[in-house]
Length: 79
Image 1: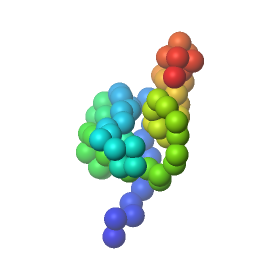
Image 2: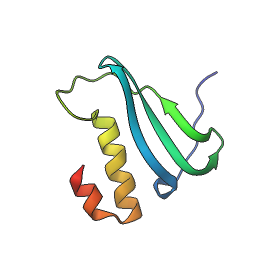
Image 3: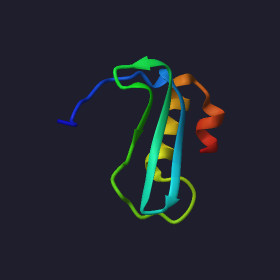
Image 4: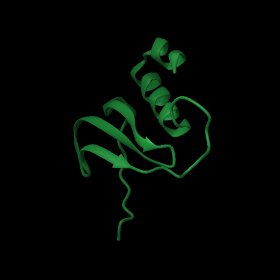
């Protein structure tokens, strides 16, 4: 059973990154300020979507939401 769900406030997220070797297979890593039930770093593979350049849309969206939650409007507009 690999289907578990927890809630983590976006303000607890330090960093969201994309790790890629091939556009078809990449991972998203979320680093947290404090450990959660899943640990201090959560790594997952989002659903595959075609995109042309830059970060995967899921990574971009998470980065923007976290910046908005922290009140960092300049970083939210930059992404």
